[in-house]
Image (tube, one colour):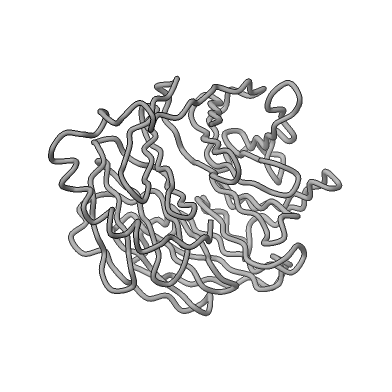
Length: 317
């Protein structure tokens, strides 16, 4: 995340609606199809998020599972979450130096994993709050990160001191609707989305302003915040919205609910239900062939892309 997307791609995105209208989704040239392979995974729990750290990739999911690739496939590092009670984990993020993996989940679960020492720090239930947390964004280096947690209560819990006790506070940016995703492109600058069709922006980590999206008429699921004027949101019914600092450009890519989106330079994938992966490039848009019909929940594009989803599904390109 937090990589700049060029104006060239935005121009293309603005014209994609016309392509969809012609029915060209799913009829892309064979050269645009990527080869995806299913990787062996020790767990069959649904995986909800995947991130890259210096030590490699890490995914989190049902039952509090934390998993990472090994010589013979993805092995389970933890099976109970930060508190050991087995609550599901939904979101993950990595410090800017790649040294720590943070994750959040049900019943107020917040964990900080240190790959170098295979240790886990429990930061759960800030301010004694045990609501479900859907996503986390961290900005800064290991041990000194700003931590932002979004959840079902519509509140964003934040700590500017690495989640230490007594350093948490919270803010409600909107009407109290659930917040499915949060992403930061700077130390205290980023965006969040809610289930009421709103996108919120902050430049101090505390004060949030609604910046759209009017008449979206779909539920938002995925968010990629690369700059103040460079945001992508994915949602229901194949919807993708891009922001250039002045206006939102809507687009429809098929009809699958698109649960996550991540851009990388001039291109980036969006993933969704039924094994759908669609690639946005500076020249066109493609529906990629995948070897699964499972619902896909998250994508990480660092190096070769990895996608995770239901029933312990992991796809690698």
